Length: 204
Image (cartoon, rainbow, N blue to C red; front, top):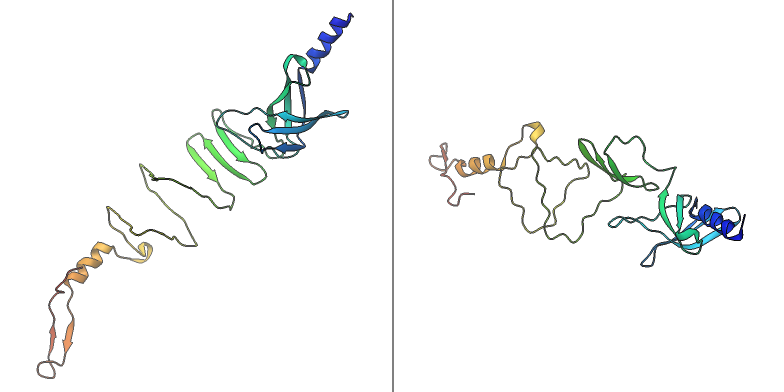
């Protein structure tokens, strides 16, 4: 084989390589990783190219594929990653999942539903001007620790009911009962008579 043929063969063999990520530098404009493509070498400061709008910091041990432009090891980039231990499996056709493997959190765009798994961690929505939830059915909140509103005003276009599971009452019903109620006045007229006052002068 000629020198040209040998160089061409080596460059072809070097075009795509793989290894396991050992270190990630996510501080710059381009994420850079370190990995050993073989037991004889370690590639450092390799740029990692990800899809626009999606960024991640792959944990140690993540599989990575290196694309060397023209087979030149000095001009390579990581173009694909996969973490075998934490990759969610069993997705159906068309489904997508964004996940943080070590943290166990995920956003699952499943067929027929969307599932957010915070795995016991806080969920924060920051710097929103307005937040609107539009439901065609019921909006349910399950919060054993309670619900707190830090706001100057709470407005409801419909009624509000408390103790719904134990025969509670709506605020509208309570207002009506309050506005129509009277107070017994005992032992005022003859010492033994009872009368009822009128309704409040300022309705609730």
